[in-house]
Length: 132
Image 1: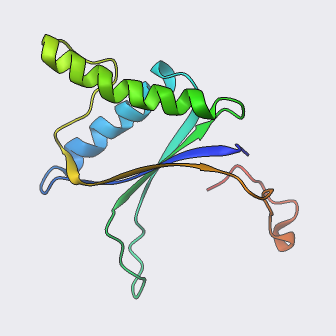
Image 2 (image 1 turned 135 degrees about the vertical axis):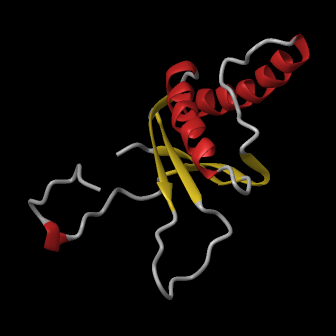
């Protein structure tokens, strides 16, 4: 289990869900392949559970950060933002694209570090850990 995560909560612009998801699947791979410090990533969608509390965000992306690369991953995240602005000013494609299907008013990014060890449920001893 990684010691650090970058967590991204987001929404698509209205009527752009399919395009947003196609873009984000590529964006996620570009991020972990082109920006140093990121080891793996996975996306989630808010589960449609009757009676569950509401959330202002429909999508969650979790990026695993290499154990000793937290500062580097954060620097690369900031670099990506600046590089996109520089690319737009120069009229070229950025290293890691951001789609206009992303709702810019509903977007949060945070870096988190583990403060405890992972604690699996003893009732699930022997179960496959790799399954979602």
